[in-house]
Length: 159
Image (cartoon, rainbow, N blue to C red; front, side, top):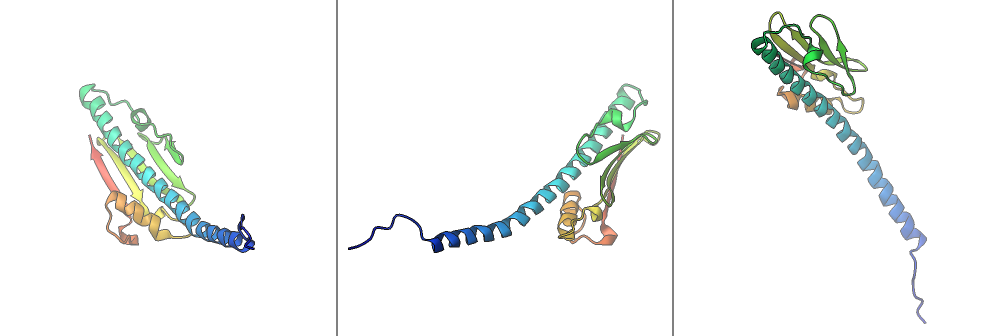
């Protein structure tokens, strides 16, 4: 007489649990790294679009409206996490990490420019420093692999 099997054995269930645990051990750190890289890309895209927007609006106000009484915050308003506005001079937006300023956007009305400064070296992660730094370098066009001597992206946008 043959017995009909209607359930999984304990060994089969334990094997499935071990396989799922192994996949979780491998996948979870990878997904966390992808999130950090997405944060770097988002920060740089925000900074680059803000500086170009500020330049265009400043040019419009100064040339078309003949109005030079504005600050950087009047031109663009960055409300993303990590950004702060400093009302020194014509205005500065700073993106800070726990270890210092990473991105800085300055307005200089007197000399008619908006300046952006990105320190890719400061995008770091305790697990893998080079990954986030190289992600930043790719976004702004710095040479790879990123070295300490070529870590800064700085550009002046005249209006």
